[in-house]
Length: 426
Ligand code: S3P
Picture (cartoon, protein in one colour):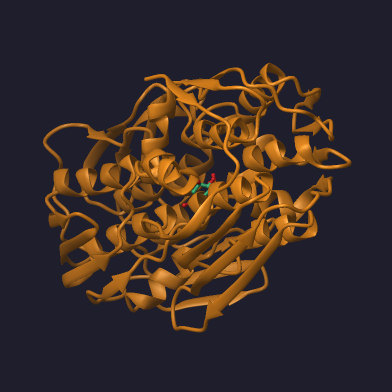
């Protein structure tokens, strides 16, 4: 589907947003392993989190979905049943990687595949530690999906992650639930800690020491009543739109403000963005409201090292802001962007160039010239939800109308995106 995008003067109003994608996946998966009926409010509306529920259903888990409310009847750690056919993770790398951790602990074999984009994403990173724990995993050449996971009796390991990846950390910790003893994942840089929080919420014993996260195996997980806060990575598209459109005045309520996710807010504020945060202290996941005003001049700079890891999902969007910033933006240490739902370095550079921005790329980053005037253009999501949304925001701030090819990709994480945007720009 192609969408036409007209330039806008503002985004204004007060909104709340669907639940966080990362948190929704974890709540659903752990609810399936818990004993009793869990309810999750504000469950992510994205196709990715529907893929997780679909896979759980195929493994014999009974769930009910009524809009954003999901109830899941967990059968305990031994409650899953062999699936009749291969599981379909759709576009969702998170579903495949996190669920593989759980499948590694099952006394049966499960095949899991996905769409063309997912079939190009590296799985060696989870195969290696899960096989060390005792599972056997077949993949296509190069460790690509589909996977066939033969679970077994797992042993606990201490695993040093070669890449900063919350998905790999979580696959190891979730497999650790099925091992006797303590399983530890050591991260090279801090990544989102939703799994650690969710595991504790469901009753597992988790300890964190520096960059090492450990879980004790064979817990009895208890069903929970939980609410996923609004997805900050989705909110970021509206924050960026507000910063680029001078007359903007926007408030977003109930947003997830877990400190391992808020680096994007720090970066936006450092760029001169007028954003105020009101965080409500709470057990579990932090949340609060965000207020943002447009009109300021944005400053550029560099994103590197741990900040790159902590803003990994927002980098295409930050690249767009970099183009209209005073100094331009350099992004370093971002090789992981090459293996997301698309090659996000290539997709971002291509769309920026179509809008008239000068960009140079390298294997693990890019340099975006500042002070650019964005030209309306024929843009492409390349089937990647975050590229669709980042460049829709760019198109709002461009001179002249743009067209976005494959705009429907946005529904992978945020089906309401275009409807909300129409409302806020009206
Ligand atoms: C996610 C972790 C990140 C992120 C993805 C969701 C998660 O991936 O890009 O959108 O929910 O754990 P990596 O763990 O591969 O960095």
